[in-house]
Figure 1: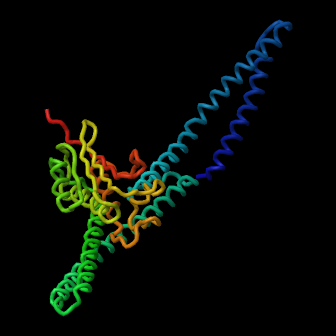
Figure 2: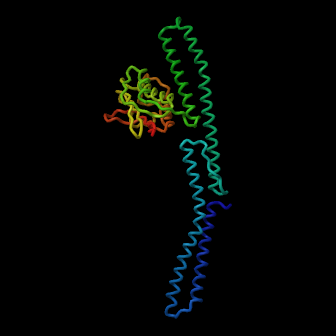
Figure 3: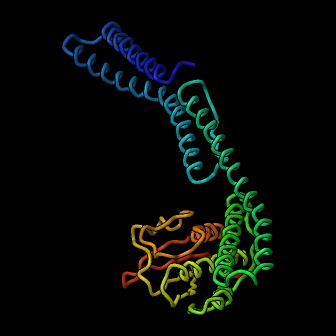
Length: 331
């Protein structure tokens, strides 16, 4: 099949040749076949000649339309494939049709998408397996600390126990993030009272203050519990107590809002804080964390058909807002 630019060029040349030939033929036809008085012949020949050119232009346009539409349809399918891949669908592919530049571009896109899918899948599998294997040495280190805790300086022992707890939490969050990335099936849902779940998690933090009303949603209780816990843990690590947690619900969405008494997140970092292992240049010194907490909050919210965002309060501070679909109203 000719190359794309050559097909356009040949179609243009063919259209011009047909137009010239048809123009001469129409002129010859009107001059030779129409038996008109001399005083009217020039007017009628020009009139019919112009009408014929207009009809001929429409005919050429109709003939060229299927060719152009065939090319643009393939470009549209390629565009949808690129958008799907960019949205996270690593299995996105486009059909390869023809043997021109568009077909070559589609083939290149499919190869690149396949390579990206292989790399991401291998990276996720490696991360999940490495995180899982870390469980065993962590258990051994914890056991060793327990066995020698009487002979170790209490301050050093407390530091070791805190380090082990941090590693354990990091491994747990990496495993959860890997499962959320790898498993694309729909989650198993059940009816949950979001206020009751938030109350259970708030009880783990002395500075947490809960307000709101009962709010029924459908979701995975384990994942939603982790979502609330990560928001509270983030406030406890990086904010200023007390931490405020509000549950609100209406016909459109269930909303979880978390903020503290600190200045919060700068407006320029509202989106960056949801990136894995993001470290703010304005962060408080000597704070700890895994760097995955808020990333998991957004992943869990999206798996439930919702969204997580950081936004500004009326007084200039910031807060984290999670919106989730409410439970469907039963008849």
